[in-house]
Length: 140
Image (cartoon, rainbow, N blue to C red; front, side, top):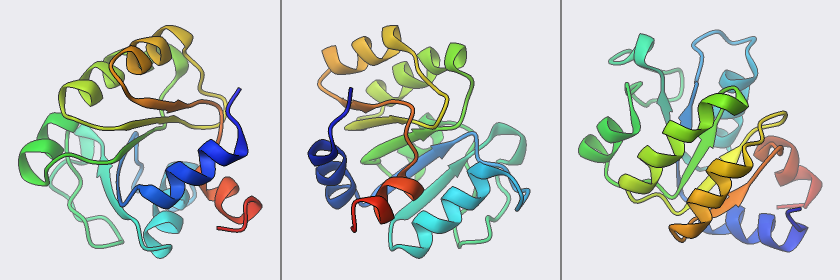
């Protein structure tokens, strides 16, 4: 279980977030969370191979992969994952390879094996939480 102090520390420390599974559709949770985080001052890099090269609504070009983000933007602090739990493993492997320091799995997303791999590589992990809920809940 992730405690509030850890979540608050992470959300205060991170500046750049790669949001994997971003959707250009405004009614999708990934789109709303990305817009919320960008509005809170985080740099949010949307990641969606089907939308790569397009412009997001918050001033960032959509990237096709975390490797592309690392090449064009540099390492990100946090990888926020909007993917099915069984699809998290490869995202975590790529996040480790590209130098991220936090893996954040969204509401309903949990993968203990991927989390253990990330933690073994020195990354912090949050599962089954949403930063857009946690920020106001914790008064950040």
